[in-house]
Image (cartoon, protein in one colour):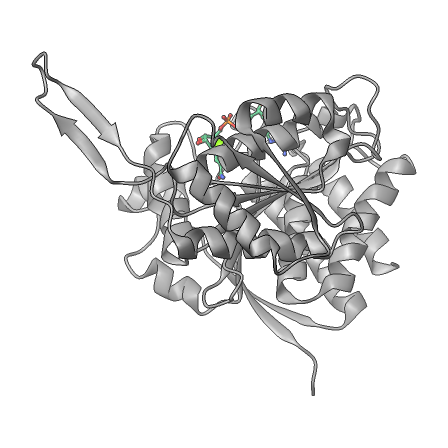
Length: 357
Ligand code: NAI
Ligand code: MG
């Protein structure tokens, strides 16, 4: 048959990742049935618990195993007792780097019933994406320390921007802007103070823009851009930034859109040369793990982003609109959204909503 089948590597990880991932899969399964494709799930128990037994977050051939999949669907990793840099550098970073996931994408969308910390703002005011360059820029390993312990002691760390690195993330951002009704793209810069790399960034932004005459562009220095996220979130549609600026904006953006339990993210290799990875923004939340009260919406929304990347846009849209409908119709909410529902209640309600979309 011509029915499509996608192979998904599932890594629930630690803490509430164990609770939210099954709800993400429940909703993905409902979407697959409703929209006529198959998901072949391959489960991996890689986590801090495994690390405590084996001394490794994942086996030596971990990336080779994941390479066989179309996408990676991750919960969260990190647990008290294992240093966070061990869990991060033992699992997430090798996947992001090894699979050249050069786009980090986060939707910043105020959902009905979610509370924004911004006064007098509603769902129509906050609906944009942050696109972060995820491989180079300020987070380079070029630099060093010299003359340690002497009065000549100095350190340096260089920002590295490459033409390939700038152009490919900007192309992605322009293409994304083309799919949005407002077709607007904002660039984060700081070319007034950082006088080699950031003017280059601006140059590549303008150059790429020539291919997209239908996209309206603007650019702001990162400092005032942060202020505008808070004061004028309605100005933004798609925002692209270097690794450091994107890092800042991709935490600020979801924060203005409300609960951490809702925020979703994707680490994307747009050419699909490698699997991309989809995960909620939140961590393993040891403070509420085991209580089954975690909000699964961030995980479920990440699943929608995964389906969109795989080419199942109708199914992805059905999940996002299902979330919006459930919340605006007074469906079950977890405590972080002022309700009393459990993780599974929300997952079941959404699976049901998507199944009849
Ligand atoms: P966290 O996101 O796990 O928790 C921060 C606060 O938000 C906690 O009070 C938690 O209860 C709440 N929260 C988080 N997700 C929620 C949800 N779905 N529903 C309701 N409430 C939720 O961040 P934290 O506490 O800084 O880190 C805990 C562990 O997670 C650490 O080991 C950290 O390294 C790891 N982590 C992993 C990430 C990943 O896997 N990508 C991302 C962030 C942290
Ligand atoms: Mg960050």
